[in-house]
Length: 220
Ligand SMILES: Cc1cc2nc3c(=O)[nH]c(=O)nc-3n(C[C@H](O)[C@H](O)[C@H](O)COP(=O)(O)O)c2cc1C
Image (cartoon, rainbow, N blue to C red):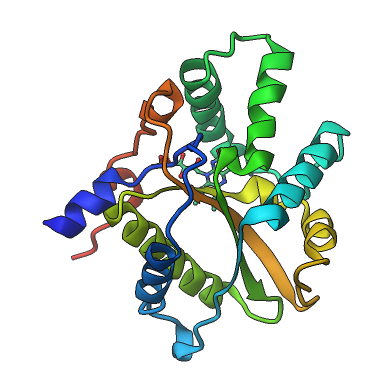
């Protein structure tokens, strides 16, 4: 039952309080996540957990790049899937952030919050070796969901962010004074981690799900 509750409680938190996340809780969640299954047990997940002045600098540089109109390198969604993004966008920006339709400036400001890691005190970069393939990205995904559930159980919120991964050069350059991200690693996603600000409506919206009949075929 505890697992069911963690699965249902986890959601994308899109603004955080500045309260630091205890290092011990982070380490516990990372250690639990490492029990995720992986192809040939290669454990392909490679993470950078960024806090403090390194995170401040990373946020600044990402916001600067996005504000300057540099488009993030994120492949477009195929047409058949685009309606999901429109529906989610309406929910997040319209309902969640209260941005009126046609308010381009309000929408731009809301999008920029992605690059501030939504105010989170911890920014995680989830990476994988470029030479690996789809099965290994599956393994990374299993690891990340386990990580998020372990955080949820500890009362810690999160938001996976492909948006952040759209600026790999900016990330590498801005972290260079602290850490060198090896060229063979691909940054698959960022993850904002922290205590969600429950006073904001954005953190109370819940994205819907299609029914299992739409995604699963039972063959008997
Ligand atoms: C790989 C991946 C990338 C995502 N990228 C972003 C992002 O860049 N910005 C954002 O606000 N949410 C992002 N999300 C969160 C999704 O929008 C969210 O998981 C989805 O709408 C379902 O909502 P829920 O997580 O609240 O259940 C991402 C989620 C995943 C798994």
